[in-house]
Amino acid sequence: MKKIFLYILAGSLGFSACKKDDEVETYKEPEDIAVQNSYDDQAIKKFMNDNYLDAQGNIKAFSTTDTSDDNEKKLSDLPYETLPSGTIYIMRAGAQPADTDAQTIKSDDILTLMVRANAHLAVNSDGNVAFASTLAITNTINGNGLPIIDPMFYFAKKSIREAATAGVAQQRSYYEIEGFNEALQKFKAFNNLPSGDPYNLQGVILVPSRAAFARDPHFPYNTSYSLRNYSFVFNFQVYKRADRPENEK
Image (cartoon, rainbow, N blue to C red; front, top):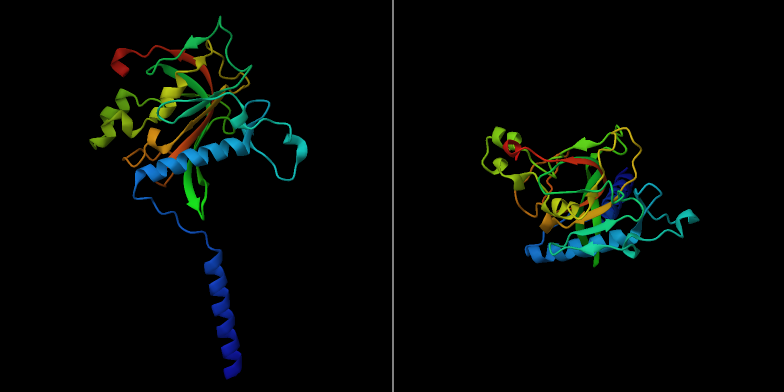
């Protein structure tokens, strides 16, 4: 009986040791924010190498087993621009509004967007830097299929800010992702596309954490997790724009 007990004990210890070795190391925030900024940039470039755009402009990951995407271009092989903030945007060829219909986007316009937005945490694991976790922020494309008007990560309305009780929540920076708004103004809006029209996504905006919330207080959106140090990826189409009344800014 004593030998049986010792065998069981040895087996359980061995199992525990294996489990500990296989566990993914918990993310540790770098003390120097410049290190996190470097992780963000490296992870964004890796994301661009690992993904492409399908026929409707959706971001898709390259398959390791299916050869049907072998001829697709990486996001990194598409024309893209990098803004001073580190935000990168990609305008999808053939998906922009015609010049006769194109509407200039201003930073405070009322916008109707078809959009998929995800937050990603860049992590260094044994020298390999990549996005290690993903949080869904919003997805009208795979959700009800209808565009959204003025998501708060684009523009926080005056009524929302004034209704907040905490001082920090009365600031637009608590809600808005600066890099997204900045890059969005490089695109043109369609001229009042009906909400039921099939989508044809215009492009991609990739925002490093320093151009989002970085380590500042922020609105939690649709997640119970903190978005501290998270970068963001937006896949979208601007269905329409309108001037915002002064009393709503």
